[in-house]
Image (cartoon, rainbow over all chains, first blue to last red; front, side, top):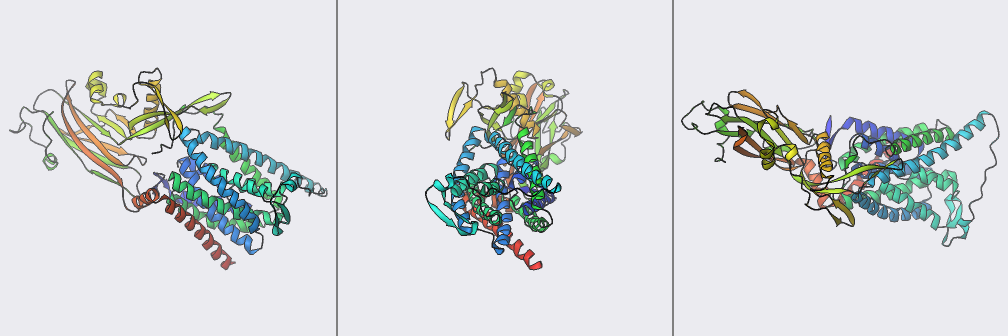
Length: 307
Length: 269
C-alpha cells in the first residue's frame, strides 16, 4: 500500500494520505477555509520534507477552494471585484514570498521562520476566535440580547486614495487595504503553504467590515488565485511540487470538502468558530513547541542545496 | 592488487580448495544479485545480496570487508543553539562532499581486522570516511547566502563530522555491520546491502576487500546503479526540465478536480 513519491523521494502509505486529504477537506468544507494550515504540519509529521509538503499541498488548497467558490458563486456570495483586487495583491505577495522562502532555505532558517509564523499567526487568530465565539455562546446561554454591533470602520480606510465601489460587499473604499491584505496572504501562502483564509476572513470582517455573506466566498476566490500562483512559482523556482502527492491528497480532499460543506448547516456559526479557533490554536502551539523544546539532536541537516 | 576477478558464473560453483589454477594465490571474487535497482512507484527500499568466494590456499584465516558507497553530494548542517529560551539555528556549515550512502559489512569488527592507519589509508569504515572540508576555515558566499565552511583542523570539526554520520545513520543511509559478511560454506560468503527508500539515485561503488594479518591482500570492485524508472522518472524529469509547465499542469489538474467534484455532488443533491 506504499507509494513512492518522485519529488519528495520518500515512500508513504497512500490510503493514509487519502484519509488525511478527506479529513482536511472535511474541515475546510465545514469552516469555509482552505485547510492548508492543518495539512502541512501533518505531512511533515508523516516524513515528507517540509519544503515539498508546503509546496505540494498548495494545490490541494486550489482544489478545495475551487469547489467552494463554485458553491458560493451559485448563491451569489462572491464579490469578484473585491476578490480580483485582493488576488492582484496576492500575486505580488506570492512572488515575494517564494523568493523569501528560497533565501531562508539557503540561510538554513526556513523551518524557524515557519515555526514562528505558525505560532504567532495561528496562536493570535485562535485566541481571538475562541474569545469572541465563547463570549457569544455564553451570552446566548444566559439569554442576554446581542449587543449593538459597531459598524464604524476605521477612519483611515476612507482617507486613502484609489477609491473603488464594491457593490457586492457594500463598500466604497480605497483599493489599497484589500490589495495589502492580498499581499500579506500571498507571502503567508508561500511560506506556510496556507491559503491565508484564517487571516483574511477576520480581516475582511473586522477591518474592512465587508458584508458578512460575501466574505467567505470572496476569500476563497482570492485564495484560488494566490495559491495557484504560489504552486506555479514553487514548481518553477524550487522544483518542490510533487504531483503524485498532491493528486492523492486532492482525491480525498474534494470529497471531504463537499461532505463538510453539508454538515456546516447543522451547526451555529459561533459554535463552528469556537471549534475552528480551538483547532487553529492547537496547531499553532504544536508547531511553536519546537522552538522551546530541547531538540533530540542539536545538529540538523539543512535542506535545500541549490545548484 | 591482483588482476580482475573472473566473471560471476565462475563463482557459483566454488572452486576446489587447491585447484591447479589458484594455488598460491590469495584472492576474492564477488558479484551482486542485482546490479541495477529500479525506483518505481512501489519502491520501498531494496535489499541486494552481494555474494562471493575467497580463494585461500594458505592456512591463515582471512577476513572479508564489503564497502558500498553511494554518489557524493554536498551536505549542509545547522546547529541549534539556545538563545534566551528559544532554539535557533546557526549559520549553515557546508561539507563539500560526503557519500549519499555508505555501508560496511565485515566478518569481524573492523578494528580487529586491520589497524587504524591501514583503515584510514584505504578509507574503510565510517570513522575513516572522507567527508570533504577544506583545510582552512573560510566563508563562501553562494546565491547571496554566506555559508561557513569548517576547517578540518578546527576544534569543532570532529563534532560536525560526527553529527553528519549520526544523522545519516539515523536515516539508515550509513551503516556498519561487523557481522554482515557471513560464510555460507567454506570459501563462499554473502552480505546484504540494504538500500532505504531515501537512498540517492546514481552510481554506487562496492569494494570487497580481503584482509589477512591486517594487510589488504585482494580487492574486487563492483558497481551498482540506482535509478528512477517508468512514470516516476518521467515525472521527475518533467518537473526538472519544464518546471513552469509542470506547475501550470498541477494547478489545472487541481482546479479541474475541484470543479469536477462540485459538479458531481451538486447533481446528486
